[in-house]
Image 1 (cartoon, rainbow, N blue to C red):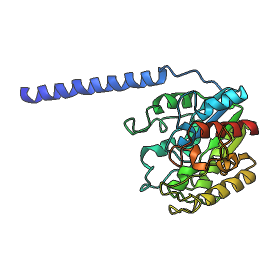
Image 2: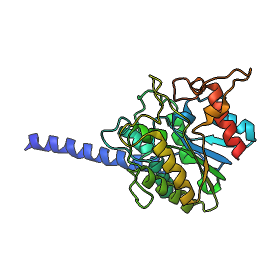
Image 3: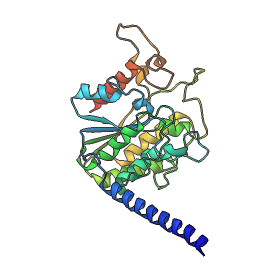
Image 4: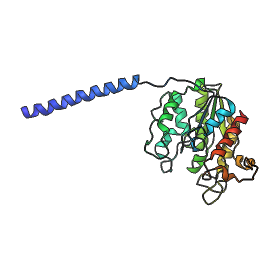
Length: 282
């Protein structure tokens, strides 16, 4: 009999400790120190085109200096507008940081899903701090939302879909969901979609010629532009930005690729050019 009592007693003690631990964890979570909610003049949601630099040469920093506005960058590299398919190269946990997921988190007031990402993944060092900033942003007190999401949807062959769909696994379905959720929170907010800039593959092939499976980049940009008109949101077309620049600061003609570090991500001059184009529009 004694041999049975001891294991049962140990089990009972462990069960009590577990319950106490769970209660204390719940109490801590409910009372944890969250950053105070506050709005901003301009918030930018996007991918690594915006988030490539994290210093005073970032697009957001340039934009703040150009406009004198309070600009918050809440972009996450490698993310999309829509949720991506399971076999996508960017699926995994970054789906939780897609624009659709972020909009749904603001709508529900619950950021548990956006906090789920692989902290050991490359180029995510800034994610944890940015997720805290994400949760602290009060969209109801924010004036302008700029959304720069399109390029990775193209990379991942996300189906373009149509605006009548509410599927967040299609580009346009996710875009409509995002716009609806933001407007539910702040009907007076300005929503501005920004097109991607031109992209070149390592072999020099332009993205307007290469199809990953959902269409060429032009197809996504065209759908984005038409959706902006139908949804009644503003639109900044930057797809040919590098072509229209044409010259460096010394007046020498340069090609579009010279505004990027790898054919996709803008270098110092590319980031400054993007910021000035947005500032001119604003």
